[in-house]
View 1 (cartoon, rainbow, N blue to C red):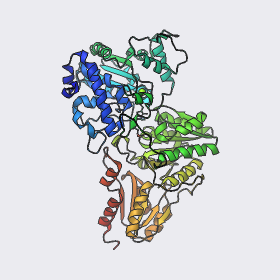
View 2 (tube, protein in one colour):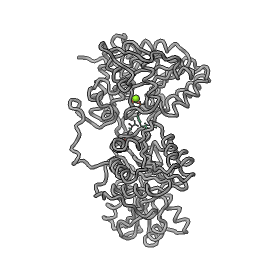
View 3 (tube, helix red, strand yellow):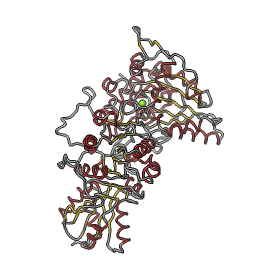
View 4 (cartoon, rainbow, N blue to C red):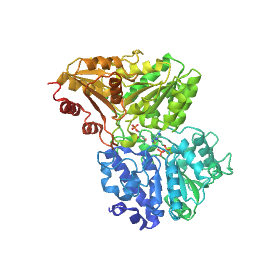
Length: 621
Ligand SMILES: Cc1ncc(C[n+]2csc(CCOP(=O)(O)OP(=O)(O)O)c2C)c(N)n1
Ligand SMILES: CC(=O)[C@@H](O)[C@H](O)COP(=O)(O)O
Ligand SMILES: [Mg+2]
């Protein structure tokens, strides 16, 4: 059967259709996304939840002239399919393929690059101000933001700013699916439920209503599946108080309803806020039932869904090792507190949250708050561990310096996803943490080379009374035995893993294992430096004295990283020796398979060996 989607390559094609065919387009688009992600992997649940919204937006608004910004952007797959990329979607998240997030360089329809959350309202507001200045009063600026993303401070800063601006053509659409990656947290979420209670809305799928409200004890759904509303009157909403014209909540899966709302809003110049309710994973039963599992995933079989592999056969991940460690440490120390800014599953904190509910805090997408919140607890002798992705810690840099380090507070940062992350690409790479952390006084920085070292260094840093950070990469561990003890090592000391000759490789983090492969072949020396700060100066100088050249190796940006720290030590000691710095080159590295990326930037064993040979060919033969 010919599909409508076959003839839709751009939103202009969509706009040719009568509105009664849009439901059919939605069914086809949903199948297209499902088929795609089952073959490529990617962000599924969120994309399935915005099928009708995406179609209605492109149908009514004049994209790309009207600006459309997807917050986080992990839900942009249907948008990409409708905006000229349908035939290349099979390359999504792969090297040189389509990005998993909106990207300005990829399409005119991607008005703003997103991936880190809660930026959409600020960016849309900025563009709206620019349009006002240029006298372009027709352009609409639309920010689509989820109930998770809108809870972040940055979104509020933008709303606050927008609320006092005149002549701004801005539409904020809150896509409220009652989920972040994990179940929603925080009072704002409670407020959204309250809005649902107070503002009865027509024609919403009762299944959606019921599930949306199931956490709220006050709401009863009677026999004919309607609400008996306890607090049935909401006077002015929070968003109206901010100066927005609020409408909703409406059913975000009713495509005709969305179209009629958008047609009204299109001609309504000013600050508009539309609250829609959707279901994460909509239309794929398995994802509806378990939107967390189907949030971001690898390839899977559409019929059977994700089949969990035999756990014994799989290597653990560094996040799982952290998850075990924090439970063990919490058993030993009742002052330990675990904090996550909305990354419970990814950070390995599911068990900790279950076993220690009183000591577990998911603070929502609020990295800045997470860090200062931990600092506050540390003032009262609690021992917070902030589990955070390297890329998201960037958001909380000032809090780390101003609230933790200057006051020398005892906060441990468990920094996951350091180095390149693969399919999420440049926006999510943790390439900068060594560079941005090592200039902060008081802070200890550890770089474990394997899972046993990870546990040792986590315990060491945790027991240190002051700020500390342990960074480890995304994905599988190396495969060494892990001691179940909670042992510590001496802070600021590295260890020589292999004694060879001529050239010494000073390794930071898991790349030490690649260094060992090269060194075993070429008879070089390898030191696992363990700490970037304090750096083992004595070890560096003594190894420098006994070798002809030094190679530094790290999965951090080459600029300002651990290699630079080694150069500073040599310089301070007036030591002259050739040094080759190996690390992540000074450019943004887009998505791709991690192995392939490491090969491309010369950080796999072959690349390391060939860099050393070409640089030092005269020094070791
Ligand atoms: C600053 C930042 N912190 C954390 C994340 C990780 N993250 C990606 S999507 C997501 C949940 C977003 O929830 P919501 O906005 O409600 O969108 P939904 O997935 O429900 O559609 C989180 C926490 C991120 N992308 N950016
Ligand atoms: C969109 C987003 O920011 C997250 O979903 C992220 O993609 C998770 O990454 P991991 O798969 O590394 O947990
Ligand atoms: Mg959500």
